[in-house]
Length: 248
Image 1 (cartoon, rainbow, N blue to C red):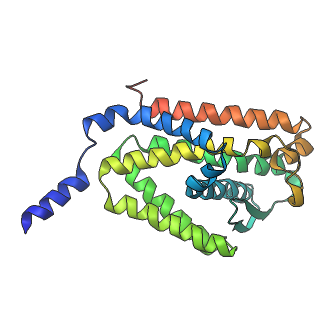
Image 2 (image 1 turned 135 degrees about the horizontal axis):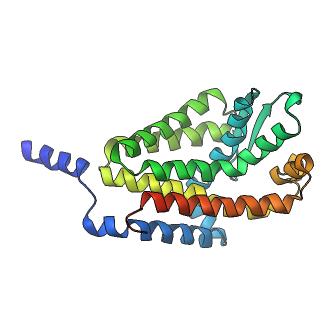
Image 3 (image 1 turned 90 degrees about the horizontal axis):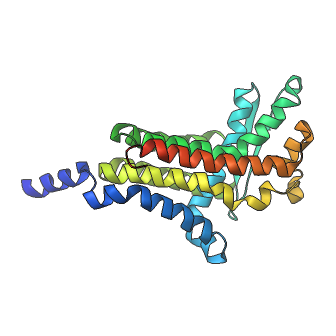
């Protein structure tokens, strides 16, 4: 009876097989490219659906948390089954025009910044595992505090539980690669919303994030959309470069 337990413990704490470890960076870059390509086809939205929902959560949390940082209030977060979301918040008028512009920018920049943090956390097992637990815990906590749409109340806790399960029941190398993969997906999610970044309005929701930045910071929405798209790429490659410093 002891041998199976020892084998299971060895599997849980094992390092990555040499071939997996050496191919880690290549797999992540390939995954990033494949993700961007898949999003150009209808079937890609279904294949990448869980990552799209997570990216929307990062986006809307970016709005809400920036409002809190600026001394405002984060009222609620809604996630919808079509992958869109909406954050309701309020900030002091004394912060205008910079405050609203920062909150608007925090949405599109939320996923790449969070993604970079996840990638950098993979540099050691302890930080990778802890970051997975924190991410899963924050998903569950946000459900209690802010999520108020029926779909969000179902999807966000499920994602949180899955991520917590990965942090508790998989080998060290799976956790490290897993958190890097989630980080890459978050960074490249910017390119799933290129149409949104380069639009001045969001239909029935009013101005888009870049449209709001144009309103408060004068420069055109396409300038801010391009700047954030470039920044997302730089953030992704710099975080991978640091995480794989010996390989790049």
